[in-house]
Image (cartoon, rainbow, N blue to C red; front, side):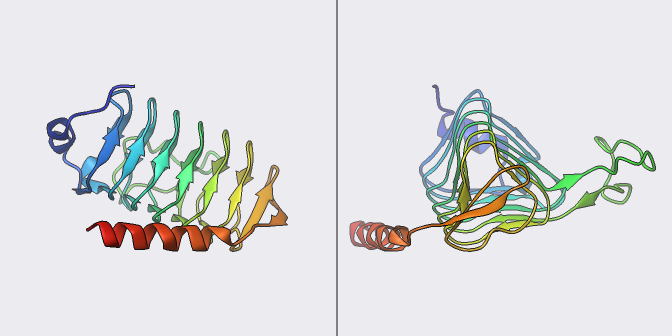
Length: 191
């Protein structure tokens, strides 16, 4: 995997970029002026980030594995220490399937008639390979799902979900809280 240089990243015109940031030269970024990247972000090969009206904001220590897709007109927010495994798709909008609207791929915000809503991943939340997250969904702190899950509703904190559509499956341990705190303390002492 080859990474974009600092100059190449700056030339893309992101709203903001942390340090260090590792962006694959095989990833694609659209509407960069609406994308914010935190510190220690890694985005692997063949990922696509296509920001709509709401933009995309990625916090610190976030990893997007190969073939992830983040797109839509609503806001997509990934908090610190959240992440996505390979081939996860996040959609912050959808088109009506009733034939009552134009396809909106090139419409302005005023002409858009599909439904859109924010997608929020809180800290320590994430999705396993091949999962899909749809609009108006929040993954609360420490929630997640394994492979091939379709998330259409909010996920409660420290809970695991599975299935199509996703259903509550298990409670997750809170050890991640201690590990996150230890890392934050280490980072603060290194500064």
